[in-house]
Length: 128
Ligand code: NI
Image 1: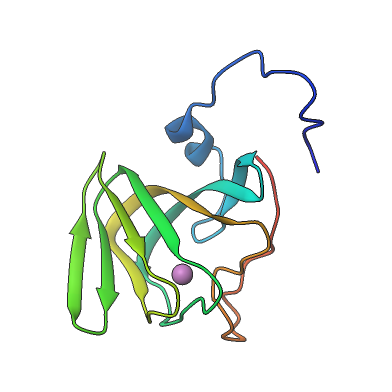
Image 2: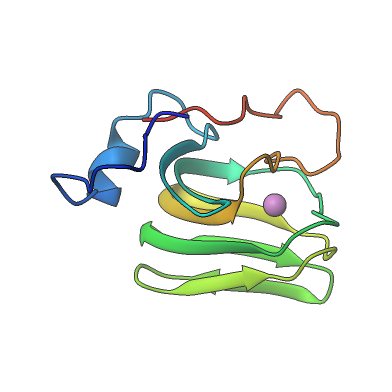
């Protein structure tokens, strides 16, 4: 764990700036933790793979660009300042035309691809 959690942080976390520091798209980076939950930022472009998270809901807050979330019944478009929560167990695929910067909120230890064993599974628990 990177933070000792004993001292209050000296500065707030600028989410858009943190996202801009990530060297690769589709590589979530942890920026903060709250209890057992992690706040992660990510840059995405194009389409991800269909997957689900049977053990948890997954929240997406859009910072820049437009996030499209494909769902079994259709898709939703999420714009900057908007939040969308995918319920646990629901199949979903994230996508963006052009780049989008997002924050995701989910419990520590959740893989970006759910339980799909795929080349796009990102290393977990990497801080930026
Ligand atoms: Ni997901």
